[in-house]
Length: 154
Image (cartoon, rainbow, N blue to C red; front, side):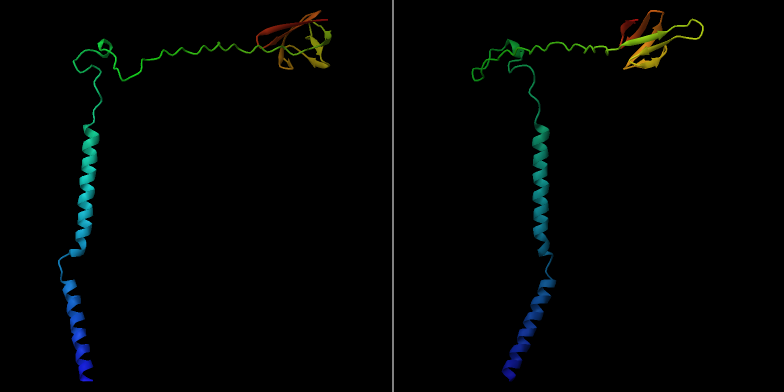
């Protein structure tokens, strides 16, 4: 029994000393994180250097002459002229005036005049089917529909 007991004590001491050695190591577990951080900083720096170093090509050629005076590059196909597509101008839509029927006129110079249009009694200033009544005379009614003048005769 003493052999087993001695072996257990010895194993216990070796485990204890191994744990103590791991605790006392200088930050070896952080080396991986430091390495990844350094690689990240270096790659971002290289990317920024490449992006900031890229400059647009100047408008003049290599010899300092304008691009129009240089001979065309043999590797590029000749430019193709593009014809603009002709689109007819948009014309405003002209609306047809509504069909109105004058059924009668009640004309009075003193009390105001009335008209019966499509069986509706109206006076100057009223609207019928979108047409505004402008004037009523003894034999005629004048309406206005979107800038067009409509005359209805009795």
